[in-house]
Length: 89
Image (cartoon, rainbow, N blue to C red):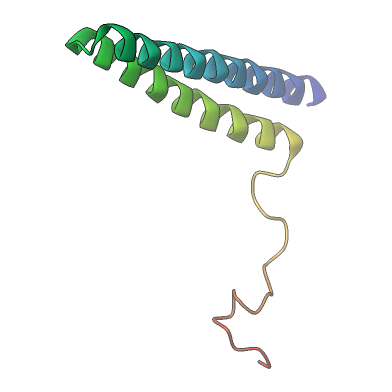
């Protein structure tokens, strides 16, 4: 079980690294568009890079939280906000 969690955590880290690289690529593409002007290909490439960054980033975070065992809350939330603001009940 520990090996499985380590592999899931490693996959999460790799996805976060891909997300960071895709975000940097998107920033570079935006700079290129500002420098040379937008074309359909550049705009589409930037949208794909930022979409990849969001998708891989969120998936990586969920996988790392799953491996750590903190994906879902373990206790019922008994705070006032959860009860709809009814403080004394």
